[in-house]
Length: 590
Image 1: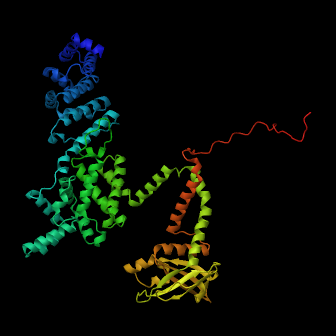
Image 2: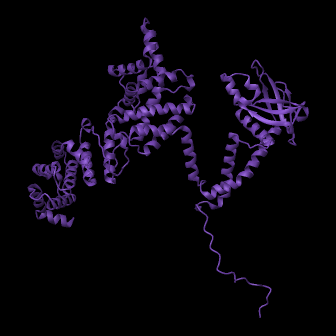
Image 3: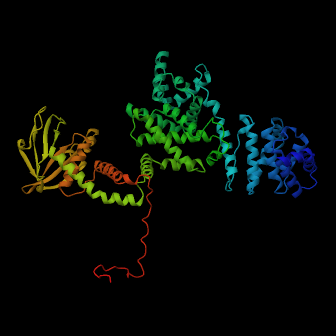
């Protein structure tokens, strides 16, 4: 600072300015002059606004020249960036004198420093530009440095910032244009049905029909404008829905009609989903937030087309419908579905796909099951349960814990369960009770009156020796559901049906069960598998084993809390060169 003040006080800045304005030497001397001028100005002793218009125009000439020393143009671009950010008046001069095409030429060269400084000047110009002047596409194949990545982040933020006014503007119920847009949205989904039904109807009947169709479209209110009064997303959600209906009409119609024909509790509401998805995308992409001074997080796919946000919405809304079906969601699960979709989008954006098609491929591959798997893996990593020593410990604990689960299943069979008989007319009015004898050798069963207490094992008339059981059958393999057809009610029975085949003389007979719940189905099939010496492979066994393994592992590792566990065991030291260090205690010392 002291040196800078002294040079400026002795007219050093003016002399450097003369060297730059005269331009007698377009090589090393000019580059050194520009660098020295920049370093003196950056101390803040002299304001950028004091620079003359001829001086700025001369620097602009250096930027616009075709044949120029490679060391000069990056410095000239850097100087113009500082001028643009510090002086609005001179910034307007720079914007008018430096054509956009020239900056794009600099962005496409292989000189990384020149590319970065051109990007910096472009973002500086855009920060002071009007929304209409910010529509630009940047192409760059060279690897990006930190500074260039930051400038691309700024450019992306400014481009997405163009959406903020629409995001902050609620729907105007008195706007004829916006009412027509809503009607266009409705007609695109129900045009043939609505027009044919609406002909010849009174005004009240037609209004009632429109209100019903808006509800089918997924709006919470019969007046859809009330749904779009919330900001954010405001009118941006309406823009997204219109874009989807116009640019992907078949996907739009399929989404709406498919869900309007589902049961009420399973339908995925298009309008509500679109509004919430727009909010989610604005949060993920930080629309309307001020640019960070250090961030470098940009997505290359946003520089590939003009309507990148709307195109991303089109991918996201179809992903939401797909995830809804994978989760078998109902209206009560709406928030859970949105959390999964947020995770799917965030994980895919973090991969920085270079194009929208690549984004679509990757996000569709990230199914609900894959999200659950990733969550489980991350949770185990956080708990340290995936370290090799912990995995080895879990493997050693499994046999003991599986024995504990087997013991619990057999005890449950000994307690017994009430089952319902399924008659040929599908009446479930008869009850019967079945249990395992305390010595685990006989299944005892018999009929029970409705409302009566479960009988004691001694009061059961029928017995089936375990030694006579041949096999355990489940689902469609069971004889008592195989004959029932393939209706929806039968599909529910398949999940709860199991049978044991046994020898009755020379014939094979079956004892058929319909479990009262999925849990009872798992407990009984596990218990019968254990009796037959087969592995217990139910989902309940897997969950119980995981819970017991987690608890037992944590108990065993309590004393090692905050002690890092190495990935590999410490190396065993090599044996000594000889074993002549044994002390014989039987020999008396002299």
